[in-house]
Each structure stands twice: as C-alpha cells, then as structure tokens.
Image (cartoon, rainbow, N blue to C red; front, side, top):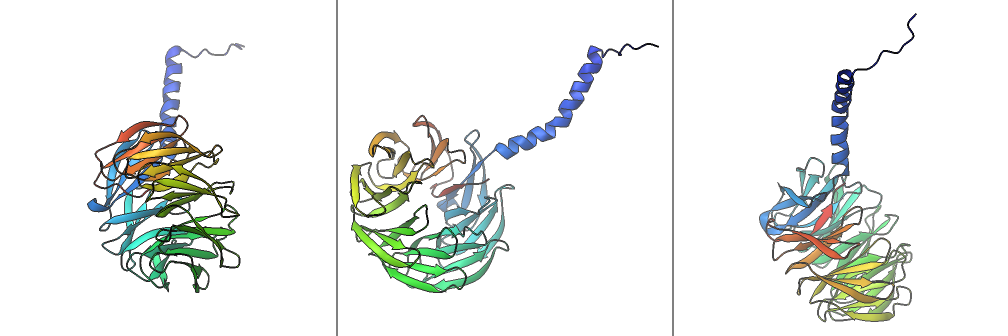
Length: 371
C-alpha cells in the first residue's frame, strides 16, 4: 500500500490560495467599513450636512437637510445624527451608516442645541425663538411633548448622569430650567444674566453655567436642585468644560480673550490665562491632560497643559476657527472654520496641524462623529 501523501503542486496551491483570498474579500471590506469613522459637519448656508471620512480626511458627500442647519447631535450609539434646522423649524434625522436623511420632524420656531438622554430614548431640543423645549422619542423619531420654560433664546441643554433631569441654559431669563424627564415638570433656578453654556461634574452632582452678560459662572446642586454659588470670571464667559477627574473647570471669556480656571468645589478662580482673540469653545482630552481652546477671532487653537495650567502651544486653524470635536480614538481634533469653508485637523499627540480639508460647503459650523 502506498502511504505517501500526494504532493500539492504549485499550481494547485496557488488555486487554493486564490479561492481563500476571494472568500475573505467581503470580510475585509466589512472590516474597512467598520473601522471608518465619518465626521458630520452642519453647514447652515448650504442647507446640507457635509460628510468627511476621518481615515483619510477626505470629503465624502453632502446630505440635504432642512433650511439653515445650525446644530447636530448624535444618538447614543451614533447610528443617527439629529440636525436642528433653524429656518425651516425642523429636525432632520440622518442615518450615519447609509449617509442619508431618513426623517424630518416638525418642532417649532428656530431649533438650536439638542442632547440625547443618557437612557437613550429622549432627545431634548431648545429653541432660539420659542419659550419651550421639544422632546422627541429617539425610537420613533416623533415629538412626545413640548415643555414650557419661559423666555427666549435658550442656548444649551444637558442631562444629569442618570437621565432623570434635563438642564436648559435660558439666556433671556438668566436662569437654568430643570426638567423632570419622567413627569416633564419644570423648575427655574436664577443664575445670572445671559445664561449661555453648561457643563456637569463627572459625579453628576453639580451643573455649571456660564452667565455671559453677568460675567459670572454659577454652580447648581443637582440633588437638591438649588443654586450653590456664583463666581465672577472674565468678560463674556461662554465655553465651559470640566476635567474628567473633576478637579478643574475651564471657562472661555470671549470679550477679554482669556480662560478662567476654577476649582469646581470651592468655585474660586485658581488662574486666568491669556489665549487668542474671541475664545469660543474649550474641549478637554479624556485623560484630562490637555485643553484645546478654539479662538474664532484670531483663527487659532490654544493648547493648555492642565497639570501646569499654562498655554504650551498655539496653532493656526483657519481664520474662523469655531467648533471642535475629537475623533473616536482621540488621535485627532477637528476644528470647523466658518470663514474659509474648511476643517482643520490637529494631531492630538504631536500637537500640530496635520491637514486642512478645504472646499467644503459654506460656513462649516457644528460637527459630530458617527459610529
């Protein structure tokens, strides 16, 4: 009996290898798609959302939405993006995988900032020209109710960590509205003139609000729903962010080109740093080591070492550096430039501008990532 194993000829081996490779091609394509991350940029004057592939920082397509898309928020799993269309009084729902608009929701006058409840089933939308907040069911993409908050020009909304309460910065009333997300009952807490932007402590026990016209920052106890303290900062405080460790609060002062650093517990200003012209937004890395400040007047981004509490770098980011967002890996920071119709890409580790994505639809504004 012949016990020798038949030899595989080179031709037969190559045929088998080719078949295996063909079988793996669809899987490889799936992996490429799964690892890709799309950046969605609201462009108000073009009535569309621009899509950028962050793997190669290239333009992908534009998605038509409503009139004057001004703000954009992702669902919890980032499978959808909700776009507030200021002029058409609607919210467009984008499928972030198919890259298309799948629903349009009528919400009322001048929708602005929005946020999804951490429990995942409610989107709260505030209105620039309405005295209410609109609540949308994120499963059905239909309006559940509208909650009266008084005033006009609400600027921001966020949730307590457990999702039980929503907090709205009520600019014209100089207050923060606290909304029970189960009963939709509302309570108003007076903070200071021009309540503008919000941040919440990592523990969820305090909400902080910048009072733009009062030149102050207020802290709210989220358990007792009452004002704790109000502290004077620079002129025109707007942007606000807290470190992940909860040990420092950063506030951008638009009218004197500074950043105030506060102790979130004592609400005492620890340090004031000079940055660029019109510091609009501040964003902090997830490890808390760096804060990035977009300066829309000087077209720069100031980088702050949070351990030393000093500005270590200033990068050119286009004439109208405005809003910014980290990619999911937090390797890159994307900064919209509303004057040059571009998005600058900053290497978060090397602290340098990697590229500028130019030729986008007019007035790139708010931005967020998909899955």
